[in-house]
Length: 367
Image (cartoon, rainbow, N blue to C red; front, side, top):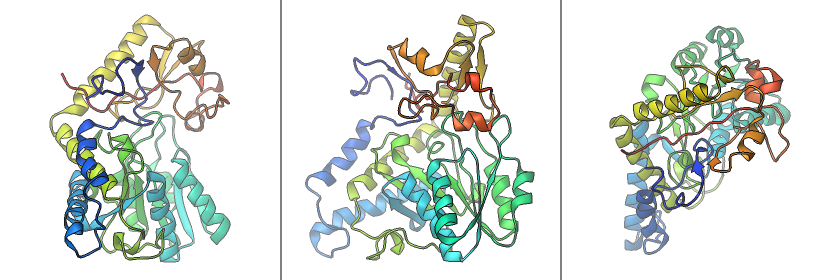
């Protein structure tokens, strides 16, 4: 599903799927009854609550199935940032640990939560560097771990370059020191197959609007036995970790998106998308010989992500000159300031080309 989406008809070619995706019409159809007729509170015991309660349970099972988890290990949240907050803050406060480790190109939801823990609770924070491909060296993590480390948080895939971190290896190192491991998989879920048991993670963030569900639909995988401080206090919803009457419609949307993503992964979508990504790269290279440079790893990256620098062209100027394409300079240029990308800077790229990148193909294409 790509160009045929009603939200894309008549507009420029959309190449910003790493920022957000349109809502799949099948997802919208699944959630619609819970915005109209099926209004009951799933925590009530009367007949109006039966279908919402069953739908909530079904959605939880569908999200769990996508990542190889148990349904009772899925906690619905209102965003990926909230899921990251629950994981990072929740794990550190519940354990009483005094040290947390993350890495320099992590999503700001994780980095800012770590800084808040440092500021408000005196937690020691270690921010690991990355190499020229944007990857964390497992040896650097091993050196940073100690008996006070409560949590390690490293994302599965970078939103700008698509670089895939060595999560299983990093998680195994954390386990040796008794530390929990959180993985923000927002950018990777639905684009590649991820199974929590194979990764060895304790906590994993899932975000709906990166895989054709609405914004505001997200979840956190919490391995059974892991203790977290709640992110919202009150009733017992979501295992007592996130109080408030559940948004059944958004949970159902996330479940439907997870089910569709699982089907697409099984049907070979990653290989088809990678072929289109590589074709685009080859066409750019042929049209601009010697000027196109790939940022990040050539192979160990998301199948839908292409991040390139073009000699003699700044990203925002290039995109302004091509209104037929709706792309992005990644997280490089915030609010029109056109400042260098922190991700590319951390990878050691020359500041003269830091804003000359584009990325974000769809995660699925039919035909």
